[in-house]
Length: 312
Image (cartoon, rainbow, N blue to C red; front, side, top):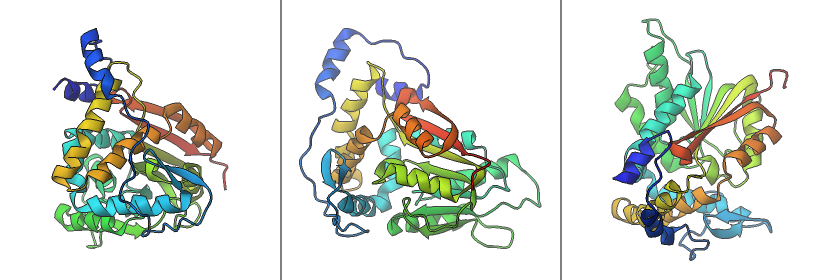
């Protein structure tokens, strides 16, 4: 219960007694884990490269990671939304709502949501515009969702009719495109806003994905990333690790019948660049006015930046 309160609180936390810290200490994140049952044989994994990267705490060939990540999300797609609620105690909804409030989309924006298969961010963007730009003649640009995983996209498509996400002419308000964040299937300077939520850590080559974001954004376009990040609070950190490594994988086994996928999830969070490092990578990729904001004391963070107005 105390961890739940801490996760909701965006401010400082009163230090807990030393006894609590001692209890939590043995549950620090491990540095290694045993091999798991993902082959990388599907979803683009070939393994034909000598370069290595991380898959959770494992070291794997760059060519294999894409396929291994694909297997993870194919395996959990049908239970993805339910597991998000269970794992975060519903807090992921608050994070995503706050994220869209930071983006502040308007009806004229051409929005690309990458790694957004189930449509959570796209539908929130539409809801935000509808709420803030009321009028019978409101026409909003179609939101584009791009995800490398076809199973996740199918889950998103199911929500279009359920939520009434149609244009005035009866067309879908969201279009779903299968594509790779490192090789986006869009023309240069096509979008006003690029969003990616809880997807950047799964990309094999983050600088390449950032470069692609730069390419498809219009001059002056905006980049927004919502992602799990680094908890630096000395009290929350051990408690967060305790919860992540001892609760989330068993939950994955119970709810989604896939413990390995959620073991990967908690490990991938620890391998993702911390706040300052991701900020540095964004600047190196050419983004300007780069900043970040921690939510829940760094459990997640929002990074944002602009494509320079004089860029091609």
